[in-house]
Amino acid sequence: MLTQPFADAIAEAEKVIAGAPHVRTEQDLVEGYDYLAGSIRASLQMAWAYQRDFPFFVRSTGPYTKLGLDNPDTLYFHAYVRDDCEYVVTGRRGSTADLSFQVLNGDYSPVDVPDSLTAFDDRAIEIGEDGSYELRFGPAKADAGPNYFTLGPGSAMLIVREVFSDWATEQPGRIRIHRAGATGAPPPLTQDVLAKRYGVAGKILVSRLRTFLAFPEWFYLKLPVNTMTAPRATPGGLSTQFSSVGHYDLADDQAMIVTVPASDAPYQGFQLGSMWYVSLDYVNHQTSLTADQARVDPDGKIRFVVGERDPGLANWLECTGHARGYLQIRWQRLARKLTPEDGPEVEVVPVQELPERLPFHEQSRITASEYAARIDARRAATADRMLG
View (tube, rainbow, N blue to C red):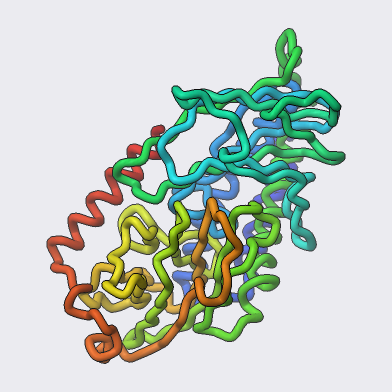
């Protein structure tokens, strides 16, 4: 049967979900099966989009295809490339806080993070007054222009990130890719081609689940619980991105205060993730905040409050029933390396003590109707962005 390899992979993937070490409750398992559904969809998309001669950009993540602690503030796109061809990327810069490009020499695996062969943001390219640009990626050559970037040996995937700081006002740009000199069209579909794609999709599915269950072990779970690291360059990430990470375990009557200076970087964002290493529901709940969305205290610091109970504060990040999960702050488009002084301080307190523990508690308060308006704005902005 043509689809049997993929059906077998789904059965194996279900066992991976059911056997995940963090599963403790029925809700953990339900969320895992939901994560599996998005992974099935994404794996099929990746297998069918594997076009290196006639490439196109594919949306890598979304509300229903999450992976790798996806950033709620980012639109991710990817296209497949090979190192012996030249590719032309054309587009128009939007008004987002950051637009960045990265070339990887493969894909993530359960034992390895792919090397980042090239990584830069749009400050490294020439952009026209109308926001238009043309980039070329290809083999090394002596007469390369300012918008030419070498595809190193093993180059396999071009990733583009468009990062929003203000969801309500920033607008995405446009982007497309083609292989220079490509003529004709992809070969017609055959049963052999489809069989290969189903087989590849199955391998992608199982690999991505195993990989991103192993990933937190490398970078998060070995850290002391309810702490966050000093800012550090993101492993396998962009040269202009730093992050601070951690994992939390909070009782219902506890809250975590995360205090961090408001950065002068164009993008600074904080998010929560589930033990499946994906973002929590950022559409219908405030599970993430950027510096533009957060309320900054008079001393120039942002004080986030992570917890299950609503404290009536503007910078509350909702755990949405997740007593355990991941924490991540990202800074992007940096002009300097960050130091520990730029990073967060973390304190776990009883919820009822927040008025005494927060130095600007009164200025931080928000009414129920104001908070509901924030959620309405998140839903509208996400809908607009996902159609962009």
